[in-house]
Amino acid sequence: MTGKTVLIVDDEAPIREMIAVALEMADYDYLEAADAREAHALIVDKHPDLVLLDWMLPGTSGVELARRLKKEEATCDIPIIMLTAKVEEDNKIQGLEVGADDYITKPFSPRELVARLKAVLRRATPPGVDSPIEVKGLTLDPVGHRVTTEEGALTMGPTEYRLLQFFMTHQERVYTRSQLLDQVWGGNVYVEERTVDVHIRRLRKALGDQYDHLIQTVRGTGYRFSVRAA
Image 1 (cartoon, rainbow, N blue to C red):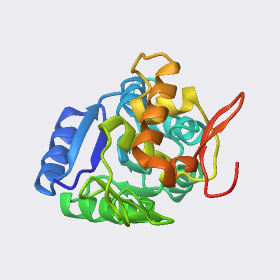
Image 2: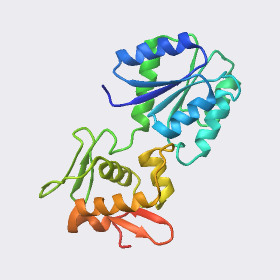
Image 3: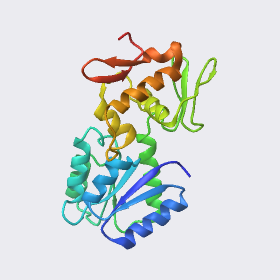
Image 4: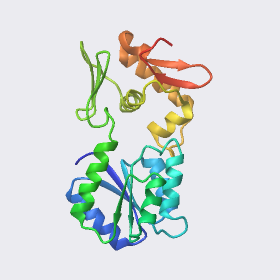
């Protein structure tokens, strides 16, 4: 598998099934939603790598959902491809103006869909998600799921690894405990904010004396990953 998850949002089951088959053949994982409410819950909880979003949905439209996703900090970076039967140029412009990364009109071929999807994912994937990222000799390899230094591999739990990966791909920004819970644990996982402190301590211990200073406490706010002095 590619390790990428795509959320299919369409109220027509046959279209979702056709897209799901195409994604399976291309080695992508997928999730399905029939309306905007279900889609938003899955996006917050599962953090898919890309959303295939139908324009015409019951209740809240796809374009309104796209606008909401791009306004929310936790979801604004998730790429969106709009799927629609609308071919008028104004509709395409409207979809792109709310933040959609691409636009495919129905009917479309599965091969075209997968090709456009791959192109959007390539543009949207930051270092540390597919390719290794290195900071002052500390290297995180997402493919091998390893963290190494010049002295060898570091041992850490899966939550500490996800925390470090998030920090290394979002450097120099302060995140509250609540934001870290949303980004690392998932928005619908109910754990106390002090759980973040426990895992931060474990991560610092795993990093050791040479690198633990990179995880900085910002009093009254939260934490940041920084190579600068606190």
